[in-house]
Image (cartoon, rainbow, N blue to C red; front, side, top):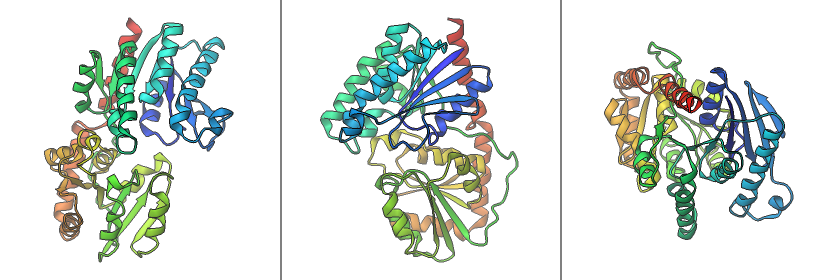
Length: 375
C-alpha cells in the first residue's frame, strides 16, 4: 500500500513516527510524510531510510503571523494541498495516517476529497496536553474540534490504553493501542560501567518534568553525575545555563533520537520525575520508561502518574513523591545499594522482553494495515 502520513513537527525529532513509518517501509509499504518544519531546520525534501519526507516551512502569511495558534489553519490547508499534489503526481496513497489533532483536519479534507481510509494516531489526548499552556476557551475548542473530526476517522491508534475510554466516549469503536516501546538491544542484563553513579534524563525540559528542581537536588550531591539532553524549546536555555553552575552535571543539549538509547544504556538510573497535578501526566506513559526497560536500567518515577504505576507493577524502580526530599532520598538509596539497582534493572529488562518491546507493538501496527488492505 501507499501511505501518506501527516506530522506537525520536522520528523527527525519524533521517534514514534519514525518507528511506525520505518516499520511500514520494512513491511513493503511505501510511505511519504508531510511535516511542518516551523523553524526551517531541514531541507524541503529528503528520503530517510526509505521514507520520503516533504517539509512545509513558514512562508508568506504563515511567516508574518505571531504564533502557531494563528498559523494552524494555514498549515492544515497547505498540508492538504501538498497531499493532493502528491496524489496527482503518481503517489496515489491508499491511507492517510494523521499524527495528533493538529494534523487531523488535513486528513479529513483529503478523505472527503479522495475517499481513502483515515487513521488518527493520538500520541496524547490533545486537549489535556495543551491545557498546560493555553486558555480554557482554546482547550474547549480543541476538544470540540476533535469530537467533530473523529466522525470521519476509520481507525484510531492510541499511544496508551488509558486513552481508549475517552475515544470510545466520542463514538470511536476501531481502536488499537500502540505503545512507544523500543527495540530489544540486549537479552542479557549488562552492568553499567561508570566510575561514578550516573543518572540520565533525556526528554522535555520544562517545569512539569521537575526542572529546575532536578538540577538543584542532584547538583549538590556527592558521588553522583547527572546527564541531561532535550529539545531546543521550553526551558532549554535556562537549563543549559544552570547546568554550568554544577561540576557534576553534563548538559548535552539536543541530540538525535538514535543516540537516546546508547546514552540511556550508559546510566545507572533513569530519571522520570513528572508532575502528578497534570492530568495528561496521570494517564500518559513516558518514553523514559520504555527506554530504561530495554536498557535494563532502574528508574525513578513519581507517584500518581502512569509511569509510576507501571514501575510499581513491574518492580523496576522507585516510585516517590514529587518533591526534592523524596528525589534525594531515592538517589541516595540507589547509589548506596548497587544490588537493588541491579535487581530493578533486571526486572526492567524482563518486562521489556516479556511485554514492553517494539516487536509486540509492531505486530499490532501491521495487523491494522493488513485489515485496511483487506477492506
